[in-house]
Image 1: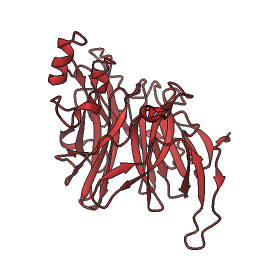
Image 2: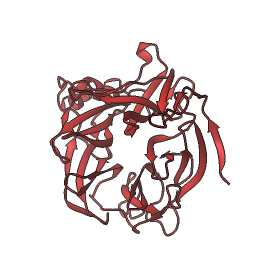
Image 3: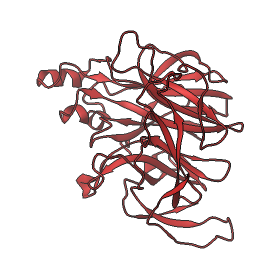
Length: 366
């Protein structure tokens, strides 16, 4: 049975606008929704649906809302790890897209085909449903494709300009040691013998999602030199002696005017240094150039705030206002990943800015 899971401590700020029929409400981060890798869908039925990692074993669940104020726990929407499932566990990073009257759930999970007994055997799958609340069923009895290495964090671009569809994903750090100046530096200090890296790739999808067209293209990776403008913030997991890995993951791509903006997260996803940057390109498969104003979202504890571990974000346009949806930690929530929503904008000069993390009262129009 559906039940009201929570109502945010929000209040109505404005009555129905006579010009557009929208309402403004106030809310405060974090939302009391324990999700990692959140994804917010505005469906054709007029409702909002929040998906994410966690909340159910070997699958996914969803919350719905009419107004971004009161959320209903719709329960499980997809169940994996069954005898007839291609995937076993670690169901992560769901994204749901509405296309031609159907809803498509993209996700990553460990593949049961694992003859070499790899510790990380992640692949990407897709499931389909008639409603955003499911039930979602696997479109195929196998991953969409097998690149020969573990991959996570599927993100999809339906490019209206070309009519093509693209899949973006992150190659896992697992068994992907890369030599760089920071790896040599860490080895010299006696901290780590090697540094493993995750990279973001892109590839064209077949129209029916049954596979890929061409070969994946490496689009983003960690900086190779210590004097790279991105090195200070992307190297923090290593330079803080936290872990011997550098991440480039959690991609989300959006087209604005004639430019493709790809957001990505760097550093250990479970740590305080998880942060977000972006890169731009004139083509969906690059080359991408990282932005000079990175990171655009990071911990605020050094400025007196209480938020750390901000990352794995997506953008959504709500009544011509851009918002960034992401997960983070606070001093109160501890290691639990919670959902945040903060205003964002692409300025006239093309610079992308996220106005967060923010834990004060904010307005949002629905």
